[in-house]
Image (cartoon, rainbow, N blue to C red; front, side):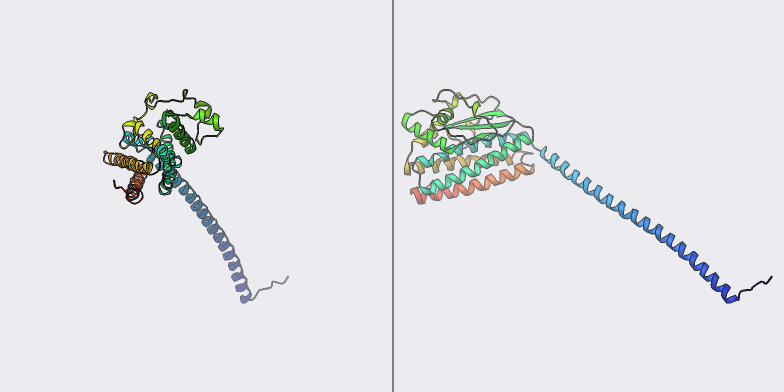
Amino acid sequence: MRIHILPAVMLLSIGIMACSTTNNMQNNEINSATSLVESEKTTSTLVDKRVGRTDLSELFWARQDSAKMQFTQPDVDFMAGMIGHHAQALIMSSMASVNNASPYVVTLTKRIINAQKDEIGIMQRWLHDRDQMVPQVTIDGLQLIIEPGSEPSLVFDSAQVAHAVKHFNKHGSYMDNSHYQMMHGSEMSHEGMDHSTMEHGDNEMSHEGMDHSGMHDHSSMPGMLTQKQLEELALAKGTEFDRLFLTYMIQHHTGAIIMVKDLVETDGAAQEVQIGKLAGEINVDQKTEIERMRLMLMEVVGLSN
């Protein structure tokens, strides 16, 4: 039997190959383990980021909800009062089209109607979102009817107001919405109110006789016109209407500015973001329009206020 003795070079080579194979296997295992760890880290990071984003989103909306609750009773009173204040401006502005107002005044009234309708909706939703009583507004010719509710509601049609002005000029009495609809078959512009609930009885209606239980007393707010002043405006024509409208609307806008001033000077009030923003916008808009109307009194009517 022969025993073959491998040369030392071959033995060394085999040993090196064996070591190399072992090292490669170990390296592969290490690399695999490292990749697994890195993969787990990446997955964990992604999960953490997703959780972080979710937490931030929840925190953001929680703070938004919390901010909604940072209001005071004076804030609520301001919103409820300004709804009625704006609503009377809609009645005044709707008279221009049938009382031979100048084109300048007609343009102004359209701008007032668009802006104050939008702001009434904003204020009603603000109260609704904070679980407060929402004044529901029905403009019935020359009558402003405000009742307590829980949902935003504005029933208003400038054409109906204009028709009521014609009726008042001719008969000296008011035509309510139900009579107007029977005569014209037109749908009133409204949000959230069924017309079938709008039966107000006799067409000669008294604003003083309306039940405003639980509601803000809108007649006593700064700048508000009396029913007698509204009727005086309804009877005016042409240049006389322009003069009266501009004079009364300056009075009306000045009242809104006083209401904003009273709000911001009340401790703790107007701190909530949305009400602070709205109050600021009302203040700026009303002041701007007052200056415009004063110029119109001088330039269009030839008077100054």
